[in-house]
Amino acid sequence: MEQWEADDVRRRHMARFGRRDTAPELAVRRELHRRGRRFFVDRRVSARCRARPDLVFPRARIAVFVDGCFWHYCDEHAHLPKANAALWREKLLANRRRDAANTAVLQSEGWRVVRVWEHDDVREAADSIELELARWTSIVGR
Image (cartoon, rainbow, N blue to C red):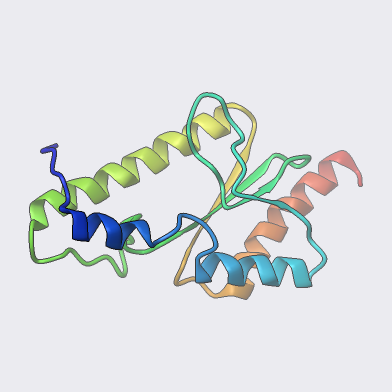
């Protein structure tokens, strides 16, 4: 992939966006909290990859990622910027490959990985997370 550097204006603009506490992530967190679920936020769970799941249930070993449609190149809503479209496409595809590699590493370490998209219904996303928690509960008998 071609390397490129952003100018100072673009760098300052992009620095304003945090990597956590996005609106979709907060919505999922609120819904799970309303349902009585407690979790850790933005916590590193593996020494083998840099992934920091948005929500972590450490006892159940469940890692939840709330993926944004642009940065994670959603099949339904992805759109490429007109400027440098080929470069952006390669970058976003690299993000998808990185996500798949991180998921594989976490699963090899015994984590259940749940990925939800920012466009998913919040209640349905929470239901899928609770389904994984219910599976863990049925196995450990708690």
